[in-house]
Each structure stands twice: as structure tokens, then as C-alpha cells.
Amino acid sequence: MSMEEESERFEVRKLEISDKTKGFIELLQQLTVCNSLSDDEFNSRFQDLSSYGDDHMICVIEDKNLKKIVGTGSVFLEKKFVRNCGKVGHIEDVVVDLSARGMKLGQKVIEFLTNHAKLNGCYKVILDCSVENKGFYEKCGFKHKEIQMAMYFDN
Ligand SMILES: CC(C)(COP(=O)(O)OP(=O)(O)OC[C@H]1O[C@@H](n2cnc3c(N)ncnc32)[C@H](O)[C@@H]1OP(=O)(O)O)[C@@H](O)C(=O)NCCC(=O)NCCS
Figure 1 (cartoon, rainbow, N blue to C red):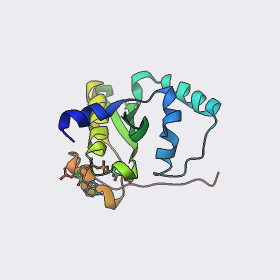
Figure 2 (tube, helix red, strand yellow; figure 1 turned 135 degrees about the vertical axis):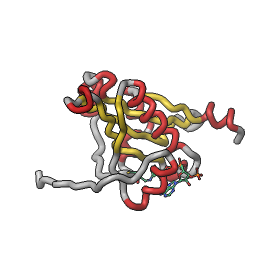
Figure 3 (spheres, helix red, strand yellow; figure 1 turned 90 degrees about the vertical axis):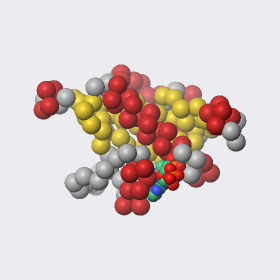
Figure 4 (cartoon, rainbow, N blue to C red; figure 1 turned 120 degrees about the horizontal axis):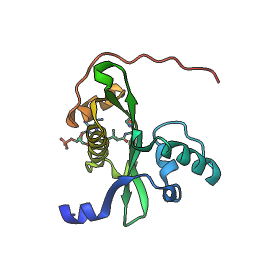
């Protein structure tokens, strides 16, 4: 596939409400526990997130031939007091469909999210990942820093 054919086939854009019918939830299920949602549940969460405006953004990649979402990731822009009331971008929930891995789509998702954070005034963007994915994020320009801590609740 030529570069031109590829960029026509794979559209990188923000999540739209109709993406539920294009396999968006099924894609998230490849990442972690994600129950099927009713249209009402999906629409309600979509509206909640829209109320954050540019401070929350979900990127998707649609395979236009298949009308299927094959990549996604999100970024949340956290407003701080430190660094002159600076903002930090937090990248979450990055996944590329098994059938489409190794085609630089993951890299495109990360570029879209980091550009959004930069354009909206963040001084840095950070994320947590598994040891297995360290190399991927290094290819995307990230550097290993500090360690991640977590506390899970039973509810
Ligand atoms: C991690 C993931 C998003 C990568 O997406 P992808 O579209 O297959 O990756 P890309 O094709 O954009 O890879 C970009 C570069 O990183 C490299 N790369 C990809 N995954 C890698 C890994 N796990 N370790 C080391 N390098 C990796 C690629 O070889 C490519 O290198 P190149 O530029 O030298 O060719 C995808 O494998 C995935 O969805 N995995 C399962 C879910 C997951 O773990 N998500 C991350 C949560 S932190």
C-alpha cells in the first residue's frame, strides 16, 4: 500500500458518538475489562466527557474500508498550581486492533494525543505502561522516568 492509499484508508480523528457501532468498545476490550454498554450508557458517558471540552480528548483511527475503529487512546489535561498554573497531559487507554498492529497506527495515536496536549499548553505529557511496551513508547519519543504506584479498591 502506498503512503497516500494508507493515509486515505486510516483516518485519525476525535471519537464520535457513532463510533460505538464501529467496534470502539470491542477494541477497548482488547486492552482491559470493558463490559458491553447500552446506547444510553455510552451516550451518557460521551456527554459527560464532552463537558470537559479540550481538557479531555479521545483519539480514534478508523479503517475507512472496513468502517471499523482499529486504534484509540485518550488524553486528560490536568490543571495545576505548580509551574505557573501549568497543565499536564495524561495519556490513557492506548490500543491498536490485533489485525492492524505493526503498521505505525499506535505511533499515530500517540502523535495525535501529544500534539493535542502541546497545542493546549501542557508542559509535559506522561503515561504508565507495561515493561513489554517500554520500547514502543521510546520509539514515540518518551523516556523512562520514576515508577508507577497503584491502589485498587474492591468495589
Ligand atoms: C502497544 C501497541 C499500542 C503498539 O501499536 P502498534 O500500532 O502495533 O505500534 P506501531 O506500529 O505504531 O509501532 C511503532 C514502533 O514501535 C515498535 N514497537 C511496537 N510495539 C513494541 C513493543 N511492545 N516493544 C518494542 N517496540 C515496539 C514498532 O516495531 C515500531 O518500530 P519501528 O518504527 O522501528 O518500525 C499495540 O501493540 C497494542 O495495542 N498492544 C496491546 C494493548 C497495550 O498493551 N496497550 C498499551 C497500554 S500501556
